Amino acid sequence: MDVAEVKSSNPQPTVHGGGGDTLPAVRFSNEDILFCIDVGRETLAEMKVNGPNGRPYTRLDSIKQAIMLFVHSKLTINPDHRFAFSALGKSTYWLRKEFSSEVDAALSALRGLSVDSSSSHADLTQLFKVATHEAKKSRAQNRIFRVILIYCRSSRPPQSQLPSTLKLFTLDVMYLHDKPGPDNCPQVVYDTLVDALERISEFEGYIFESGQGLARALFRNMCQLLCHPQQRCIQDELDLPMSLVKKSPAADASQGDENTVVSIQ
Image (tube, rainbow, N blue to C red; front, side, top):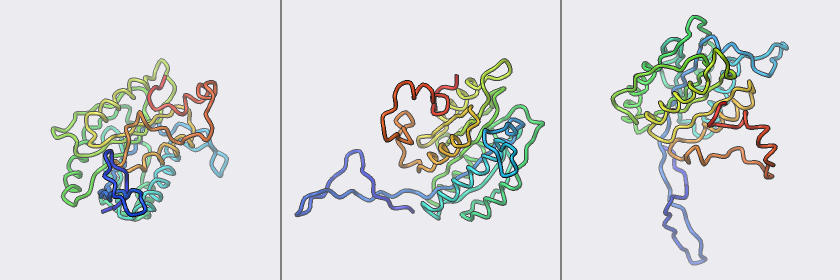
């Protein structure tokens, strides 16, 4: 178990001879984190960054990099967190079912990831069933369970049937999408994902989106997901990274597409 010192909403200070407060130690559970990575054809969309060979990275390339950044960083914070990996074609299937704290296990799972161009629609029902089952096993070990869904489809929202037992795990979503157009409805997809998150998530779940093809936006948001679910503020109060100087309204407007976590249009 992690032991961290945090200020509670109603701290009870202990005053010593010289004055001052001490913060009570609060216990946080180790995490079991299941990544679910969309492998639909829209993951082949190009990002606005080139690889060593001069060719642009695809969304899937950048997603793999962002996940490894997350895994390395999370294990640096606490080496007892564990990870498993699944992919989302028409439904969810395992890439690596065994939860592990080994970086090599994460690398091996991601190497086995490939695009399924035949899947146009996605069903999250199996993902939620698997997460509910695995969350019960994690709870039996005094751990908490989290799903990080990375979704890339803009043409239609995912389908899902929510499990009968809710609030057993935390759901985070990273949504990479195309611009709205005649064949795309990213706002509808986003709203569907928000609805599922709010109904199913045990602790405060975060959802981030980007339609700009910027790898740095993906990496930044994945770093925000490092936050332990038991230590989170609500997303509406999340304002990271914080600027050292107050931005002008014009600057905020010019960067709105990249920084927003609420509206896509």
